[in-house]
Image 1 (tube, helix red, strand yellow):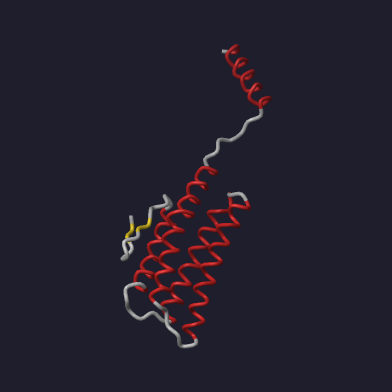
Image 2 (cartoon, rainbow, N blue to C red):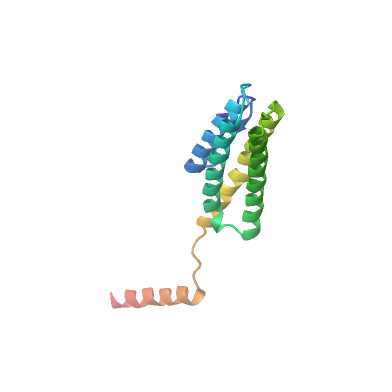
Length: 152
């Protein structure tokens, strides 16, 4: 389990790729909530890392139902919009407040521990579904086995 400096933790999702990306994002957010100055460079680095991670998750979600995928992707768009607003503030000379940094961290931890963990599990379940076989095909295969047994 990865720990945030404020006591929050990331639950492993079960996907090595997603968990590694979560760790990298958490490192950036931890630096932002560590009390030091946060400016355009830090926000831009976070934006880049988060956008790449969300692209990874979008690929993982391809097998999910459209409505489920859309809700998750909308949450991603909203988070990126929040980061973009903070970048715009930094470009005008403003700085990130402790509240802003904490909100980014909190959203990320909650989203990762709930939606992302569920996403990986749902994708795993969807990918593990047994193949469906038609009853006629199954009966034919039994007949073939009987014919093979008679030939022996």
